[in-house]
Length: 448
Image (cartoon, rainbow, N blue to C red):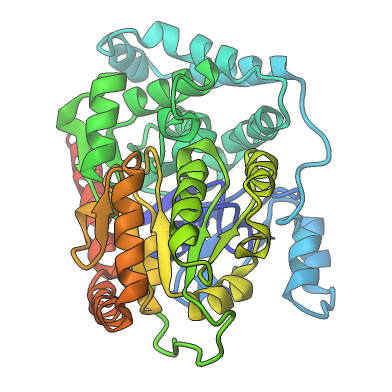
């Protein structure tokens, strides 16, 4: 079985939890003999043929341009960073096609139908509007839309030259690419929803993104939701057919070498917020909790690790509250820095307003850090040894944090239980379910 997979993130290209989720997923699928041709946003036109679990770490690359391929294999790179820079993994595309070319590319793809395809189209209600809609909603002027436009245009070329049994697209950024691949090849499409625009925006959000999400899931043969919470969201908000939704919870790759660091950052208890500083993640609730807890435990330290559009607002508000060095900001952390700060933290908080899943709590729990998470999160469906509290219930969160500070033995006991629990939440189980979705889609396709 071979899958054409479109994803916006994959190590070393990581902006959030999607990258690590795709890494764990791909590695586990490769162990189950699922071959994957991976497409991520790169400056150069390349794809990554994954055939063994080790390939998820080494990232073997194939250039569509033969001269570039030859040049690549005759070039000596000092390290992976230099190699990745050559491929353009860490850089945005330098040039963008005109938006109108998106429409033309899609229309050409649609026109190249066989008679059999035309008959199939007639049986798809509302099909005639799909391609015009997706082209229209890609016409945003923000840089992210320009990058999606470039990525989508390339999808047609990959779809034509590669051989695969099914297509897997992750989130709205990759839905148009997956749709084009399905139309060109006729192969089944699985759309994976890791987060909706309702989650990210904490409300209505960008209407273009909403429309792309709706179209991408409607057009897909199957939709994988990362939690029951997310499944209910797409059913209620997007009216996605329940018959094609499959729930597969995310997991976490546990490092067997993880050890809790004996070195302390501070004398008092360290409480950590790790994630994007955006409305979705509830940073203001974390700040409110900190204000109340510090009144009773001034030796505690609250750390906000990450970056996002609300960072400046939170910094200014914490300064106005005169928290000084008791509320600290680290900015964006790389993988090693994340590991280091988790080793030295005591409590992890995820006060998200709406969290489809949430990989970060599993990371924290793997280090024995006691987790306090929002009930409005998918991860709350799969863990027991964590405190689950409504994101808006600041008094309840304050009470729990104070109790954990005052009873360190209790905190350590819960942390150890959480660490043992996370060891059982493996990507192998999730990959088995995802492979079953692929097989279901392939079998239906072959029966048509």
